[in-house]
Length: 84
Image (tube, rainbow, N blue to C red; front, side, top):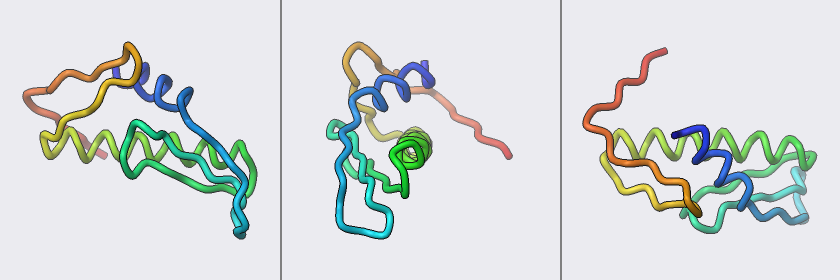
């Protein structure tokens, strides 16, 4: 469920070159505040996936809604335990 959502979100990412030390910029327009940069496109993609994961954890912990991405949805969980 979560890995499918992350995959769907990363497939909808938009990338562009910006004038910056890390010139690759990526965002997922459907997920407010989800963006990342990188020195290469691949680094930017990896960073964006990490941001999506962190964004999901915060929203699940706070009980905030998670918008569907295409056909991918994460239903509300009664309790989320994160260890490590």
